[in-house]
Length: 277
Image (cartoon, rainbow, N blue to C red; front, top):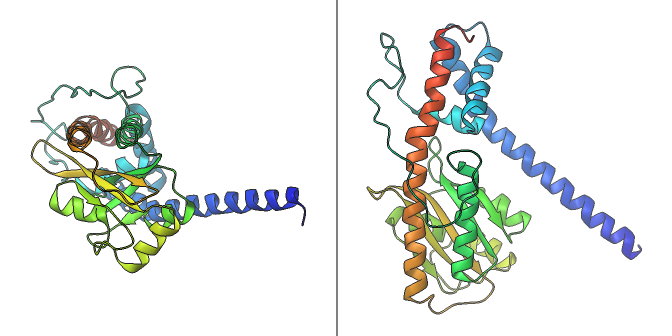
């Protein structure tokens, strides 16, 4: 095999792995979306599942919220009072929290995706590494799911696409609501053996996980920086900067959930009450 053919083979293999990851993500999202469709079809007496999907898509596009997020909210948020007009008649709107780290903006508020990307970029800059990921709390399954990542290989991303309550540094940090440092992946007892092997194969020898927390201390996500060597200590200044980042990001994500996502649900509700028109 020539060098050109070998390179083409690696490229095709990576494209295939990316396609498999996309199919797996769609397969995981499909039951959630189907469940939300059934709820909406029953709630608004819609003629079919396609009509329910159209409601979610219109709300998603109007408020720049992922379709999966809309479906997740439909499933997890208490249903509207049948006798009331708005879904959330007593909701108190609060201003968007300020962020001291840069987040790309469209018009008005930053998007959730842009904020998560900025959180990861800022965390890696503070930690002085090029490998890491951001996870969000999974409202329907529990645990954490990867939303943004850089520097990780396909096997790592596949293995840690969803993380439960045990066996990883990020699960420990989420459970305790506090940062957690693994100085040496090879010897730290926090990992299950399968998780340890995948992390080591990915080239990570240490990691630092920071929960994204609300003002009330609820963990709504996680940012983790990975290092290609064992580490001793990040130093107090960097640890404090990462804690501030986690608190700011957590407050912003909580605001987005109770403002932008609920705006999308309110819009969906108004459409549904009008028969989807």
